[in-house]
Amino acid sequence: MPEPVQGKAAGSAHYWFIGECMVELRRAGPGLLAQSFAGDVYNSAVYFERLTGGKATCFVSAVGTDSVSHALLDEAAGHGLDTRHVAHAPERHPGLYWIELDAHGERSFLYWRADSAARAMLDEAHYSSLQSQTGVCALLYFSGISLAILDEERRTRLLALARQVKESGSMVAFDSNYRPALWESREAALHWCNAATSLCTHALMTFEDEQQLHGDADPSQTLHRLLAAGVQDAVVKLGAKGCLVQTAQLKDALSIPALKAEPVDTTAAGDSFNAAYLAARIQGKNSSEAAQAGCQLAARVVGYRGAIIDKAEW
Image 1 (tube, rainbow, N blue to C red):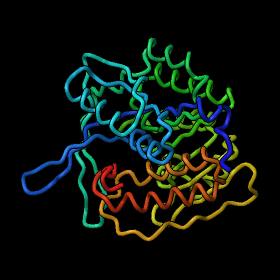
Image 2: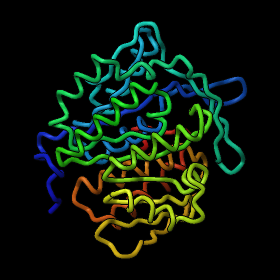
Image 3: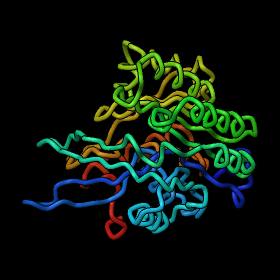
């Protein structure tokens, strides 16, 4: 029997995914483009909703008032996400990115997001509204990208929300998802990501990101640092090598192998892993079972083009 959601009665719990959703463009054939919506935290929210089906997965962000913003909200609602906590920034529009794939399915991106509406979330009114409703939040999830696109005042507000949720006895999950181009400096990224890590109960990091950000020599060093910061669940994702997971209650790390996959597009591999891991933990699975669920979904997602598997193929 799954355990009840940590800190909240399962029937009243809401799950907040705070971040950015962008317009995704990719090649669909000679002279043709395919358009969809995606973003690291948004991707995780969609997969988390599919795996839990509780109709209480809230995407927290900001959009404009233009037709593309309306389409983004319609798309989110179509995936079952609750958009009540999406703010509106009338003078801004969603960011946009172009995705390129190599012969092995590895992706690279070009971004147009300097004036993204998501950068305007967590203004005073938006923050105040969220702060008054943290009592129903059983999980708050955000990433280093969520922090990087915000100014310092909004970053402070995001971490204040995380602190409030954690102090209420609920889960706070964080993935550093380090993207140097988004930060004003590596020192700034270290400051804010370390602050976020100290507030999270569940850390879902990728070793390459942590190596680049912290200079970690090996994944065990990353695990040790995360647990020393007070994290309850520490996960270090290793791509095709699977992941390492260790909790505050486990003396030794567990190595969870990746599933064999034929990558078509590695976009959202880590995002989907995070969604499956958190969904499993919410549903009462242990850390090993949750990590296995994460590896299973990630192996499936990389076999499809784009960040999110179509509902028809789900």
